[in-house]
Amino acid sequence: MFPLSDDRPRMAVTPVVTWSIIGACFLVFLWESSLGAKAGEIALYHYGMIPARLLGLAKFHSHVAIPASATVLTSMFLHGGWLHLGLNMLFLWVFGGKVEDSMGHPRFLIFYLLCGVAAAVAQAIMNPGSTLPMVGASGAISGVLGAYFFLHPLSNIRVLFFLGFIPIVARVPALIFLGLWFAAQIASATFSVLSEPGVAVWAHVGGFLTGMLLTPLLRQNTVKPRYSRAFQIEREQGPWSM
Image (cartoon, rainbow, N blue to C red; front, side, top):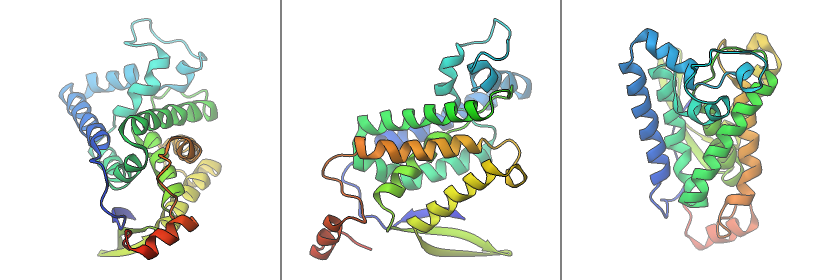
């Protein structure tokens, strides 16, 4: 299922951080594409997060571009292809702005980066011997999904899915859509037969849980989770739409 939009009211602030992250990821990918196949692959090894390198379990050539610790940040702006980039940015476009609206610009940027770092560390800890680079924004975006799940579980998400070759658009509560998504990540991480090769599912799990844990600390006090009694009272008074 592909998310298209939600039914949350119009945001109070323009999601400039979300838009900036999307723009940065596209620009970095254009830079990757300009390098050519061989140099592009080398760039992924230079700037992607390699678990064995991050944990000091494998030696790499001394000419690697940046310290291993810095790759937990740089890796979240790299992508392995247009489909990888497009799906990640779609999820960030749908969910990022509403989470940014709940935290404000500076806190959301800090939140996003912390979730990305936590996701990379989770992947490294659970797969310490890997010498393949992990790239992509999905770990940080998983944190955004965790925040949305905490803040707006009763919102409806417009999703696109295919019944055979027939495209269908339906509304699914965020509690179900994101709950099923997270359950799928747990299942894929736990049972390797269900996992798709090359997908850092532990980064998704770590990012999502980090997002849920950080949201109560970073959201603005005026923002109330949508399942709270305060939300129900405000909705009866009219400022919320379904």
